[in-house]
Length: 317
Image 1: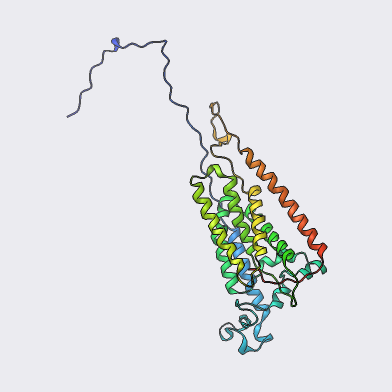
Image 2: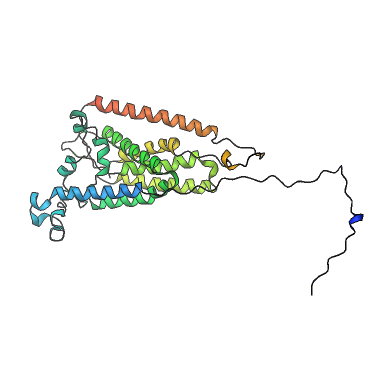
């Protein structure tokens, strides 16, 4: 059975023409959520690092330069077998091969004009253990950052952070009786960690659980920096890469503040009060970070070429 509607006398209905009619609140306009970038650059960096490591093993050819019975895993790997533990405990090629193909050697950079080694060294790795540790970190950190900010920003961040780590490494190491080279992508990877921290700071308004995100990130960074105290690891490259990435994050990873709406998402004629795209402190941090970056790179290069040749003392992981 259906329900009957109560009868209504339309003539008895009246309203006050002087009483304002309540209107619904104006609609809020929000842009559609940004689509994540397709991460292709970070996997390409991963492939390039692995390919370069395989190439150095091929060129090393341990059985031809060292007695076969001393090469590690010679029956299984043949030409790609590793140098003896006494020469390379990380399961990799010899020091001479790494130096030939771009390892950081301050004497070569300053005296022979091979400044390209400040960048080429981040594509080389001392061994399988070294490569796996760095590449797992790269995929874990880099893929998410590239999805959020795109390949161009993350590519610049990776290369400039790696350069900053190499620069500080070459400046901080002291002379030794026997020369040692420096290889590894750790400076670039620490740059990604530093950029994550500065991105959290400069985009503070868009995060919900701010303190939890900050504490967890600081713990991760602290644990990674603690690895620098392991023997044969030069923490200066880690610190140089981290500082470079931290400053670059204020420049490259700035995002609009919470509540900002682009005018193209607002219908014509709608009365909507728009916020400014960025806050004043974001512009302030960007300018300060950019000035510090330019000054840091310029002063570092000036010191490097003023101090003359000097021997590197440890391998950078």
